[in-house]
Amino acid sequence: AKERKLQRLYIGEPSAEAVAAQMPDLILISATGGDSALALYDQLSTIAPTLIINYDDKSWQALLTQLGEITGHE
Image (cartoon, rainbow, N blue to C red):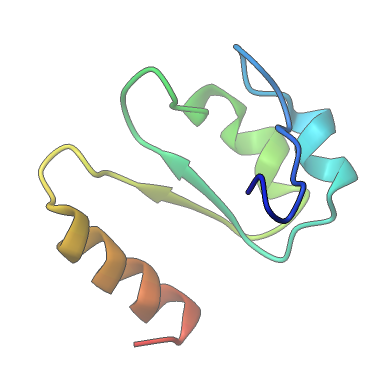
């Protein structure tokens, strides 16, 4: 991210406005945890297709496989 000079969309609470400004094709939100934006699902789903990912019970490999399947990059 640093090499590509990407900036954070928000710090702290998720911001639907900041996400919308990026014009995403797909939004992934976590189902649980401190980084969950589940409370914003209705707002986010009006911006782009929004999928809820539960990674509490998955290894990073299983999560990566799931994301590959979702995006057609298996």
